[in-house]
Amino acid sequence: MNNLVTKFHDKNFPKVYIIILNYNGWNDTIECLETVFRNDYPNFQVIVVDNGSEDNSLDYLKLWANGELKSNASSDVYLQILSSKPVLKNLSYTLITRQNKDYRQLNDPNTSTSKISEANDSESIIFIHSPENLGFSGGNNLGIRYALLRNDFEFIWLLNNDTVVEKNALLELVEKSLSDENIGIVGSKLMLYNDPSRTQAFGGSLNRRWGIFRFITSETELNKLGYIVAASAIISRKCIETTGCFDEAYFLYSEDCDYSLDAINKGFIITVAPNSIVYHKDGKSSVTLYKDYYGIRNNLYFNYKHLKKNLITANLYVLLRILKRLAKFQIKSFYITIKAVFDFYQGKMGRQL
Image (cartoon, rainbow, N blue to C red; front, side, top):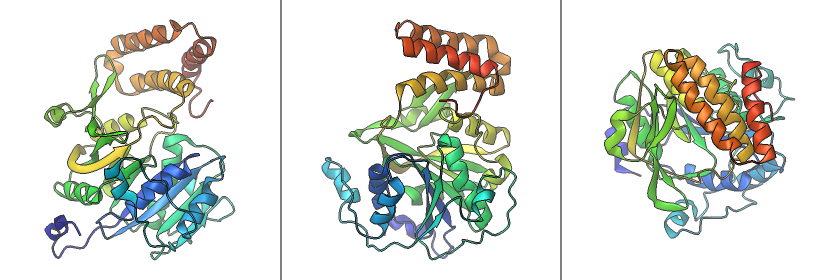
């Protein structure tokens, strides 16, 4: 086990729920899980939220948990090491669907912290099946609400399903989180899965005057940290109970920046654990029309929510983004971009595509 464990010495390891959101990506999710179950942190449970998949993802994931399906490892030799020699199966699991009496509580934003009846500390995985795609925000909120109902954790690790993790990734996140009681969110160092020597992001910066988001790709620029990239982010229980869940108005894109700012406004510190390494298959599940629509609509929503003092300049930047898309002279792009603007001003948020 990683020698960082010795730094905890006689302390109890606080429990971590690892929330992985799956949407039509069971193969990626299995590769991710293979690395998650090799991680050095000894006290965790995995929550896999199947977000209305249409490719029988849940069936494949259960086959994998039962030891009946293998992961397709990366072609990169180093990344193969992280996920090869599959973890010991059978992995015990619980399945929560809308037929379960607890499922209604998971969809209730005002749910209490009463114990959930499906609780079992010995289970390796909790599968939660949503019959519809709730987006990044809504899907992760199902997992977060489940953890709150279990009422037995100190941290939640949000982890994209299109990632693989170093063995010490979670240990580093927890250690950083415990270094200051005011820390609410800690991000990992994200590397590009298809080019593992290149950094994707240490986090993101936010230009509040123009409303421009940028990835920070150098550790020397962490003084500009404005938000944590939720592809790998650990959030303290105190932060979740104070800040709440993700804003489901976004559905997809910008919700991680929104949540970071909400946490900062509540008095929490956000930071990065540079030695927590996660490899990310950036953009694999993104759809261009989704980016055009949710990117523009949510950018406007974010500006009105967080950048009211700079609305003129921030919205001017959005206008430049719109003109760039319209310049493509593609009918679908034109339609979806205009729809994004009209939907925002008509208050049509959440899932619209």
